[in-house]
Length: 57
Image (cartoon, rainbow, N blue to C red; front, side, top):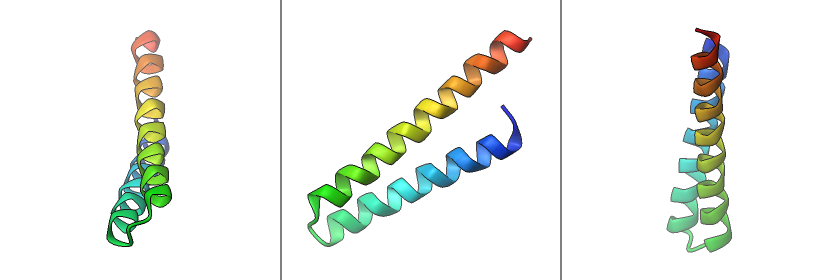
């Protein structure tokens, strides 16, 4: 996994956490769900990159 990909996935995960927290604070279930979705998407991308790295070795 390249450093750029790691940073991008971490930023997406962090943004998702921010959205989730904002949704909880404002009692906005849609924003909270969107934040959780962003986190899941970032985690899946990271897992995919790890699989690709494993096959490169």
